[in-house]
Amino acid sequence: MGSSKIALNVLSSVLSVLIMVLLIFMFLRAGHGAYDLGYRVFTEPALEEAPGQDMRVELKEGMTVLELGSLLEEKCLVKNGLLFAIQLQISDYRDKVKEGTYTLNTSQTAKEMMQIMAGEEIEETAE
Image 1 (cartoon, rainbow, N blue to C red):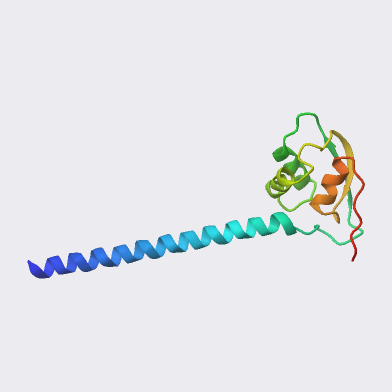
Image 2 (spheres, one colour):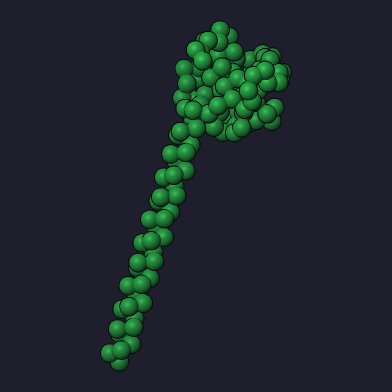
């Protein structure tokens, strides 16, 4: 009888340790994913080097940021439409994007595309 209690206690302890290790692994994995997403929101480069390819994009009235992100992803202007939607939501251009037809380029960053769709001049960056 005593040896079965010891075996159950050992098994219980081993299972507890395994569950803890699994939880730690899941938290580390989630943290890495969150960090990666946050990093990409602020540092995502253009898809191609200049000169890139021009693509015409038509923004319709009432289009959501998710629909816009999906459209840009379909046109191969951004790698991830959801990431673009997040970038737009936290940018100064959130409420400034206007409907219309735009010519965007695969060598432009998300910020440059937002500036164009908001009707602003693209800021020149020193290279």
